[in-house]
Image (cartoon, rainbow, N blue to C red; front, top):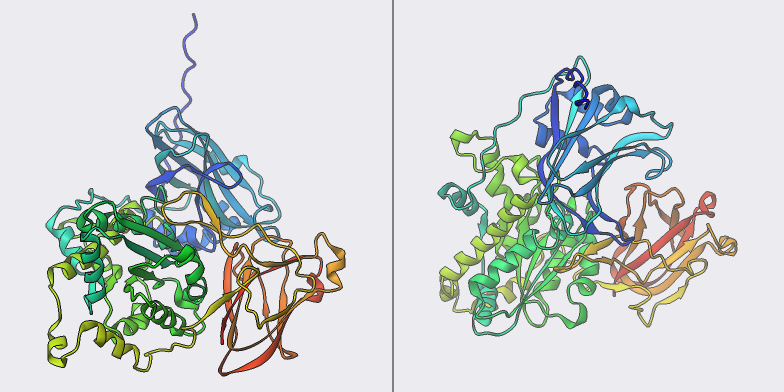
Length: 582
């Protein structure tokens, strides 16, 4: 009987660096029935992953990762491994290159079949021919055969001749019970603030009454980087910590309303729909937009408007301002924290907790590395989400231990609630132009708004969808929309407009961004004058984009016309809704 064939000569050892190292992945069921864990690497994020997981600082090598052409010059092969409890679990790895013209369909897909045994399989770039449309390294997908499978994945890039890579960073396991970890968490407390409303919620839950915790923010609040996203995210973990620490029984409700890539400019419009849905009255609202608001046109007016909107709700909920952080040690807490200072709100800074210790070595007091904290440049992994939840719990513990009325309340002879009400009567520190904003769409129609939908007579169902609350199922954002579809209905091209007439002080348009080739631009006119062009391809991925049409000091009647650009009338454009202030 013949024995096995003699092994081939081993491959020459090549330098490599990680873009993923021991990252948690989870097979989540998508709307089409497929079971996928996505890792988004578009718009230069591959560079950031190389910096975080691979410790790459070489500018030449980082620059090559910006394009498919450069990627091909730098990378010889890709090594991929996945470890699951069932070693025979079948998984497919896909690294999708994005196209210049056809973002999702024009690029090359690099693929390899894996099993969950932790063994590395390789993709050799020499086995592929790039397409003429290849543009930038895009998204990574792990495609499972079985839902709800957890695993740990590593992806490293082996380099071509002439390129070098640094040695791996030594990492020790994060000890979340150590004194050093507790000290790190304590640095997150920016301001305990006027804690009356939080204490009231704690006392309420201890008395056995129902208490609701709500979270609104961007992709970090949605749970991006957590696996599974619904139960490993900071919001769910901090809700669980609150329930275990304070509730007399199972009497705490959970609302999660995070939407990826969206700032407070959109958050203030969707707050009623996403947080107060079905008559919910949250007792504590955590607001997290510190890494999403860089593009806010108002530089904080939208943020303060949202904060005031929540504080002024009739049942008087507590507000916690949470300042998350990117892997480049950046957030907007310097811009946004004055809002919290004016109203003396509890504030938690993840930046203050973790960023100072990132630069330290193991023997200098480092508690957690960037690779351990972050899943990618923008989102924490499971360990990072745990740190964020612990930061919130630390604030709540401190408030619970602090007792009742603060010293200045006694000095002023006022209750803490009265002090807050007086602060809300002060001039805003940034602005409150949109405090009373409302949503207008096909479901929530304003009786005094006159609409001629023109050619916008369809409803778009291909929408940004998110995991709300503790669910893994996806909920579409702004499903009651107006869609122009010139790809199917040639009659629409004659009426390629939408008109809204109403009396209001401020108006915002929410439209759908997309990377698809069949979407076009729309021009926005106010009272016959051109204001701007809404281009779904500027951001170039499917999500909700809010822009200000006008923000005036007085309320007047206006006619707003949204008209498809002449050259794009055979394409699509979706108005998701409007935000208006009377």
